[in-house]
Length: 431
Image (cartoon, rainbow, N blue to C red; front, side, top):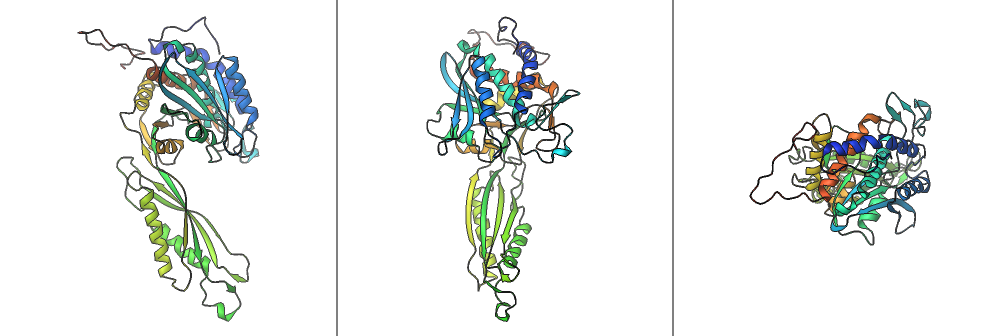
C-alpha cells in the first residue's frame, strides 16, 4: 500500500477516494497473490493462504489471529481487529477466502489460479467471490489503524475459509462459538456486484423424506402387489412439483417461497423391489412462509401420500438445518451508511435488494445481528468458467466501505446550539 506521508483529514469523501486510488495497485497485487493460491472449499488446504494474510496484517502493524474450529481444531479463518481509543460498537467486514471448484480446466481462457490480467480484467477462481473483497477489506483496516485514536468502537475484518463447503466455519466460530463477541452491531459482507446492495435473503429449510414400501423379488408373483418405494416416491415428487410455490409472493421481500426436490436415492438391484426411497427437499422461506409453515406443509404431503398407500409403512421426515428469511430494516445503520456512501462513490444509484439465495446474513439474522450481504467489485463468470473482475471498480468499492465504517465508528460533531447544520456538497453530490 502506498503512502503519501500521512492521511489527509477525515472530513471529505474526496479524501477517502484519494486513499482508495493510492491503494489500487496494492489491492490488485494482493488479490492476484491470493488468486494464485488454490483454496477450493473442502479440497485445498487453507493454511497457506491464511498465513499470507496473517503476514500481511503483521507487516501493516495490525493485530490478527487465526480462527480454529472448536471441534476439529482446523483453521477456518482469520480475524483482524482495529480497536478505537474509546469504547463503542463493533462492525465487521466479512469476506470468504475459499472458493468454488475450478470446473473444466480446458475451458478456461486463463488457468484458474493464474490471476492473469487482460484488458483491465483479472481472471481466476475466487477473483469475484471473494478474494478482491479480502484485499479491499485488509487495506481498509490498514487505513483505519492510522485513525484509531478517532474511533469509538472496533472495526473487525473476518476472513472465512470454510464458506464454499456450506459450513461457514469461520463465521460460525467467530459469531457463535465460545468467546464470541457480544458487541457486534452489524456485519457487511463483500460478495461481488456493483448493481445492488443486498439487504436480505430468503431462508431455507431442508428435509429428508424416507418413503417406505415392501421388498420382494421382481419375478415373484407374490410381489406384484407389493408397494414399490421408488414408485411411491415418484408420486411424492409429483405432489411436491405441483406445490412448488406453496404461498404467494411475500410483499416485504418481493419473492415467493419455493419447494424443490434436490435428490432421490432408491433401489439396490435389478431383481429387488425397493422397500425404501429417500427424497431430499429444499424449501426457500420468506418472512411470511416460515420454517414452521414449511414443516407443516411437508408433513401434510407425507400424510397425503401415505393415505394413498395404506398397506405400507408411514413416510419418515427428518428435518435438517434451517435459517430464517431476513430483510434488513430501512432504519438499520449499516444499510443507511453503506447506501449513502455508495451513492457518493458510484456513478449510478445503487438500489437495495433481497436475494433469492440464502447467505451468511440469514445465519446472522438468527443471532439478531444486522447484515448486508452483497456489494462489491464488478464481475463476470461467478463460480463458472473464466471468473473475472473489473479492476477499475476496486477503488469505488473500497471508498464506499471505508466511508461507511468511518461514519459508523467516528462520531459526528453536533452543530453549535442555536445553529442549524447546513448541507455541504461533496464529490458533486449532496449527502
